[in-house]
Length: 244
Image (cartoon, rainbow, N blue to C red; front, side, top):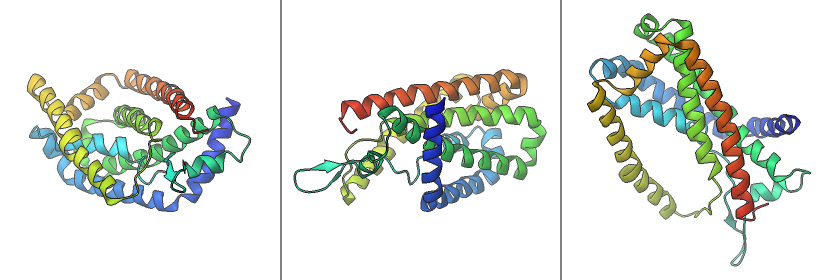
């Protein structure tokens, strides 16, 4: 527990310094909220998976936007290193503390904007307030936050690959996102609708209505497991790549 406190203290320093990342995440939050403010209920009532896709992308990526990462960058023709890890190595910190700081930073940044997004939706959509009382909406929000922290933790745990600072790097990532991830996501969501007759968000709303306390407890367990699992994975990745 003492190590987690120290890791969160280090994360808070970087959070205060990462003003550009906070601005990016805030704009991303407003953009998705503005889109769903007008289309969420329509998507649920007309069984359109657009809202499902928006929720999944937002909760998974909001804490990952403008992240620091442990990227290795070229220092000269023969040497590559992670600038962030080189800086952290000047502190009396072991691999475990560095990994917990990195995961903790992603979780803190994620939760701040995830909660803001949930509050904005509940405030701006009257139908949502009719369907879900405050306790049920808390359960609904906790489930999505737990999902976002799990997927965001996965991205953070493997955020140590060498980075190519060229346009080709971004082109490749964009192509993979458009032609690999998005089709797989759409197929999965379409299958849920085909087998059940309803979109994913409808089922999450139904679960939050019927068993809010169970959903909240389950979500908290998932969050704690995500912290534990992805911290262990990141420690292993740092050690395997001999980064620290």
